[in-house]
Every structure is written in C-alpha cells, then in structure tokens.
Length: 292
Image (cartoon, rainbow, N blue to C red; front, top):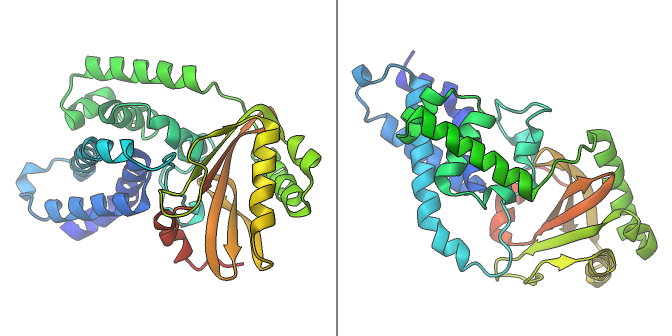
C-alpha cells in the first residue's frame, strides 16, 4: 500500500477527530491537509502503525490549534457555536446511534469547557475507543494519567449536562412541530414545545445581527423566534435536514442560506436552541448541493 493509500484509508477518521476537537469544518480540513503534508515527510521505517502515527499527528496539531485559538475565541463577538455540518456529508467511521450525541451541537459546545488536552484524551477514549496505552503515546502522557483525565472529564461533562434520552423519532416529531408553530406564528403552540429552563444561543460572529447574550425562559425565547420569522421576507423558506446527527432546520432567503438551527432535547421538549447566522460558518454548508 502506498503512502497516499495509507493516508486515504484513515482520512475519514482524521477528519472526524479534528472536527470534534475544533468544531469547525474549515479548521478540521486544514488539520487534515497539514497532517498529509507532514506524513509525506516521515521516513517509512519509523512508522509501525499508520493509524496510530496519523492519529497522533492530527491530535497534536488540533491541541496546538486550540491553544492558539483560545484568545481569539475569548474575544469572539457574542456566543461561539460550532460550525454546523450535514451529517450525511460527513465521512465518520464512528457514526453509530450510540455515538450520534458526540456530534450534536450541544455536546460540541460542552467540549469547549474542557482544556485542549482533556478534550483530546476524552474523545480518543470515549468516542474512538483507543486504549490508554495508545492514548498515552499520542498525547505524551502515562496511561494512568490518561485514565485520570478521562475520569475528570466525564465527571465535569456529566455535572453540566445530565443525559435525557429522547428517541430520534421523537426528535423529528418535535422539530416538525416546532417549524410548524414558527410558520404559523403560534406563540402558545411554540411555548408548549419548550422546556421551562430553555436557553437560546445565536452566533453571528459580529458580522450579522444576532443576540449577543443567551436568552432564557419559554416566553422570551418563543417571542424572539417568532420575531425573527415575522421580520423576514416573503421568500423565507425553511426545511428540516439532518444536522450534526440530529434533526435541524435550514433557513433560506431565496437561494441564500440565512441560518441553521439545531436543538438539544429534554423529556420530549426542546432544552436548547442553537442558531448559527455567521456567514463564515455557513459557507461550507451553503456551497453544498442541498437546496429547498
């Protein structure tokens, strides 16, 4: 097998790792490309396992990238949300029902509360099922240290987001009802779909109009959502699509993708609404062939 064939064999895994680490399609692709360039310079006799070597390389690149980007994200205008991706377009070897949640917007946002090293170790173990010896070699830590990092990360994430199982079918139904209520301007119908402790995040990146702070509470969130809809033009069209492994909504004005909505669910209600309107984060998705 040639070096290129070895790289292409593991490319889906590399992209999946980088996207979960960085929450950005553009940055993930950059890390994959940089890994490829470095891979070409590696002497063959130094590589025992192409998968292990490439995984180590891209993980370290992502850790370095996150550390350098931390100041930039702290200066970000308004809430920072990950770049949405149509799941059916994402080459993901870990794309199973059990792991779908690790691609959700809510989970990627939660990963932001971990340090770059914690995020890397947690993902390698809990998502990609590396053993602790392999993880230790990748991040240059002892297996025992890696076990401790994973345990702390799991405790930290669990304390911030207890799991509430909502079936994929229920998620689809709730999303359809949500879109219908928005289209009809049905305030009470919309409120009935929202959890009492709902929060809405809107990411405009300082480039377009968006809420600069999270909104809380059913009435405030519902009125905000209906106000958005009422201000749009007559050719404002919405469609449901699978975004980050869950039902999401793509909103178009004419042929232009205006925004993407994704959700977190709790007890058959919407717990969180995530709205990405930053055009930089919509470009990759807008360039796809998914149209209304």
